Amino acid sequence: MRNTNVNLRAQHQQPVYARRMDQKPDRKALYVALGSLVIILPLLFISGTLIFFQVRQLNLPNVFVYDRGVGMVSQDETAALVDQIWNQNHTIQLTTAEETDILYQLTPKDLGLWVDPLETAIAAYSVGRSSEPFSDLRAAIYGQSRIIMPVLYYDESQARRTLESIRDDLHISPIDAAVALKDGTWTALPGSDGRIVAIDLTLKDLSENTFTILTEGSVPLSLQTVPPQVADLTPLLDEIESVIEQDLRLEAYDPITDQTIVWSVPDEQKGSWVKVEPGTHQVSLSINADDIQVLLSIWSHDLGDNRSFDPELETGSVIESWQTGKSPMITVYHDPTIYTVSPGESLWSISLKLGMPIWYIMEANPGLTIDTLSVGMNLAIPSKNVLLPLPVIPNKRIVIDISEQRMTVYEDGQIRNNHIVSTGVKDSPTMAGVFQIQTHELNAYASNWDLYMPHFLGIYEAWPGFMNGIHGLPMLSSGNRLWASNLGSPASYGCIILDLAAAEDLYIWADPGVVVEIIK
Image 1 (cartoon, rainbow, N blue to C red):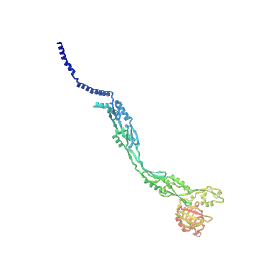
Image 2: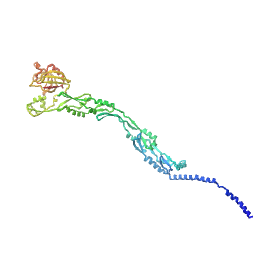
Image 3: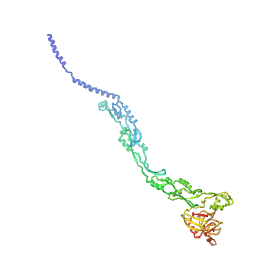
């Protein structure tokens, strides 16, 4: 019975044991548990990470502000970094359009550009804190960069003020063509373009490409070319040359020797006088009075000793003549001289020898008389020009040859007339010298000799108030005509006698100022 019970118990318990041994584990529950862990652990990690970055106020890894990493950096540090990089240490170069010349180094602020550090830092910090934080965080964990663009502001009015402040520095005025005298030759200088800063075009480019300009650090200035008003004056050279080719002549006439000397102004000198009027480009000669004095000084050497230009010569009259297309004629002046008295000479003989009336010599030597004259005395002799007080008429001349007793009348270098004359007798000779027609008297009267002298032409004062001259056959107050048969031989008291017809013709022809040369 016992065994039976045991067996029964055994029998009864064996199925239970068997069921336990045969029962399989609940794998589904296990998988669920494991899956939950897979989900929960990353979430816990992500949540923990987010909590970590949130608590520390840090940007997520691999966050960039443009090209500068700011991962694991606080918001304040990011703002400071952005301000330093983009605002404080950043420069922008103003260049030409070809970007070959750097004109200015400016700060972004100068051009109205400003990156907002705080707004940019907030944007960087916002990565991972958006509506999809887990996606952002996962991207950061797996090394995916998140680039934030700087928050950029542009103030066009500030940029305009800066460009206007430097506009004048960059302004280049156009240069008109010109002509200039170089090394004695007139040459044409071409005109050159100028430039101005096109502020509106530059601002337009700056507005449309703000960020590119900021990142590249360069902005090309829009420059406009300004052409010159006059680009070429080469044709003016021909006109200048024609002005220089003008023959500016100076004629110096020596009435004593009847010699004319002609000088021409050198082309180099005329070239230096050329003046081109600004604007109109009218070409003219602007003759310098000081240069005329230099030329006269040079030319005076051609006159030789004891001759010079008329001391009363005014350079202004020379300039005026040239400017009106005329060739001025000036008078050669004979300098005063010194004469040393030789044995046997008297004032009268010296006077006749020099062709200078006695009273001129006495006047030039105060205290001199016939009695005070002595051998070896140095006498001051006036210039021969004192006998030509009137303006000389250079194209007319009367030459009287005492030895031939003839008069030759010249006009324009040609013989006009030849006349037989009578000059002074030995005791009252006609003085040889160079004189001038000074007076006209239709019928002069000489009380000393009771003579009427028709068509009298006074040529020099033998003594103050006593004029010697040329006239027709004289007539006594009684009506007798003298010396008609004596023409051709000395007969007068010093005057030059012509027949009546010749005297009348000469009277009409011989203007005041005509030179009378009397030779022995």
